[in-house]
Image 1 (cartoon, rainbow, N blue to C red):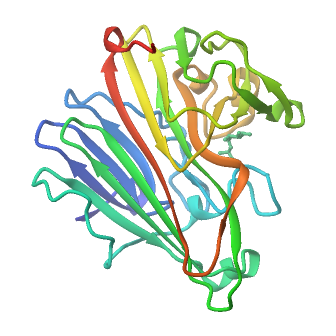
Image 2: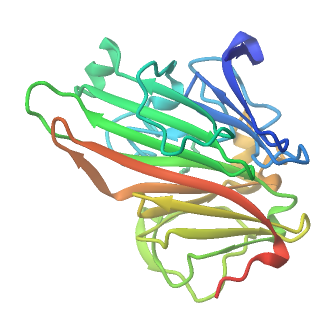
Length: 296
Ligand code: BG6
């Protein structure tokens, strides 16, 4: 099941009978490819991405855990994205026994070094499933395995980079009229206007208590991405635009034009877990032709 990817890093390839596929690197537990049944790549991965630990991979779906961004004392976005995950040999039972099921179960447990910076024994099980129609589901189960009665808290995000033809032509629906924290303005709280989001400069916002469905419309490609989330109240929207891109060695100067990050997340209110408790956070991604989607 495990094959060699870039720089000899282990990856797992999921394939569906109708032609869709996905790739998951054990490094970071990171999805780095999601293709529809026509073989079109739906996720953005920078052509300057560095597939070399301990550098995180720029693109796909990095997992931010146990901390989103710098909302805490750990390194930015936590450490799950630059750890080597393992295949889970004792995964939770499948929710469907369908013969067309294509899925992989990974697990991350803290190393001795991790416990020095985050002194909590956790078990993070990640299931990546590719559905028959090419839909991509990520299910995270995080369990407090502390034996000393200590609860712990964390924040989380599926830092999904969608591939878009041209960021200036993209609209995001589902976040109108919500409150958000603006990371570019010291996390001050604002309220979004009534219109769908469009992009003409850098954006870095955490939308609070967002609906469970968000749509990303790419007019040029006549494609709409649907994001459905569960257990993840917030939604981060990020595009670094030109200046920040230039300052990032692994994005490439024009990379920002072809990506938008919409991140199903739990940021404002950290998740608390008592010993033995488990949290589940899901994200399901699918696409529909642009004309099919109607937000009403
Ligand atoms: C976003 C954050 O989720 O990730 C941004 O809101 C951050 O503030 C961006 O710049 C990218 O982070 P990184 O660590 O992958 O460069």
